Image (cartoon, rainbow, N blue to C red):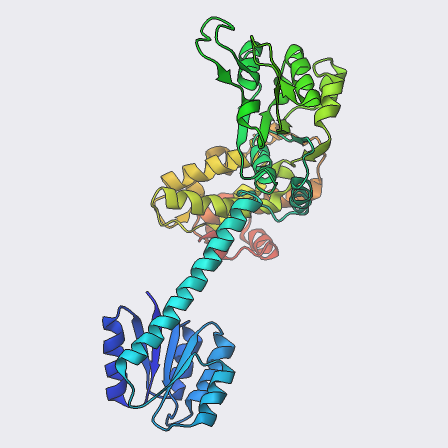
Length: 461
């Protein structure tokens, strides 16, 4: 609903305009003088302000100047009983949308207001559509502000305009398919097909048929001719996911297709030219696979023209909150729930977890939390237990040191803080009860609580 502020010292005029505009479907506020007008403009953002030019304590020109400073997108209409070309010109220069003389034609004023509102709606729709298209064409929900992700975003922009073959590597769940889609929709091939196939999900004979197609009678069950995915993706992009699972025999056939830019359907005799950009993806170390004889060296170099490595989520923890907030909005909307955010303690648990399943595991955890949560804020109780579990006394030996090593002092400090936060949460922020809960003296607990800045508002959302 569009909002309008009416400013006039005459009560009859204020009431008349308010009633008329409410009947038109607008939300209307009124002000009787400059003081109340300034307060209203500072407090709310209006689509349109309609103001008399003469007021007891100021004038409409001054209010217009203030409005343009505070809310430059608000349209301002001045009304006066004293015709003055000089004043009208000044008002327009400052930014007034229009200038109306009393007694005015109500239909004329209605047309002016409708024009302002319609223009504003079009501007909003244009901005919304532009942002939507940009989001769609840029990174397809690839979210991250970490330096490593910014490097990947920059690389996507650079390689999208080329036709070079790309190899995307990264652990399962890091978003390799999203990166491939982002490259496609930013490329000159974006108006053509983006085709996906998991090379590790089918045997060699079926994979060959899926990629290259087959002719009728090529094998039992081939009752018709069938196009392969290379043909389906013509002029577009083909993503070969889990290419490291492909058999050596199939690798030979794929290499030939990439080098010759033509394919032969199973059972066929004629070559079919193809124009396809190939993006390969894997969670394996293909260089090691080459050394182990599981990957052809010539195919590896053929697909590894432009390598893109997606970092695991544990190596870009500054992105966890951004991703979590995104998934909260997504699944809250899908499930029709009014959940707006995560509790601060829930965020800390998410940021301290190692996420072996990466972004996919985080998304699943948030979807589960949205489904279970009954309030407007996701609490720690709605998160999976493996994320919120704190080792109990006697369980510390299960801790495993990461391969990259550890900062022991920092880790001990972090674990102490987590224990204190959890104790405060369970004891509703009461420090004496929390100290007793973890077997500490109140004096020691108070010292660490002050050191870690553990206020009640932090631990009890």
